[in-house]
Length: 69
Image (cartoon, rainbow, N blue to C red):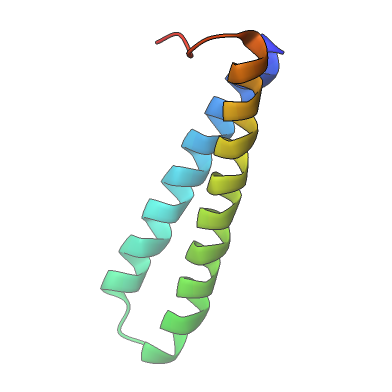
C-alpha cells in the first residue's frame, strides 16, 4: 500500500504539471477557438487529480496515519 501511495503522489504531481502547462497555453494562445478545448482538457486533468487525491487519502487512512514528507 505504501508503494501505491507513493505512486499516486507521483501521478498527482505529473498531472499538476500537465495542468499548469495547459493553463499557460490558454493564457498565451491567440487562437480563441482553441481555448474551450484546452479548458476542457485542463478540467479533465483536474478531475483526475481529485480522484487520485481521494484514493491517496483512503490509502493513508488504511495505513493509519499521515503521509511522510
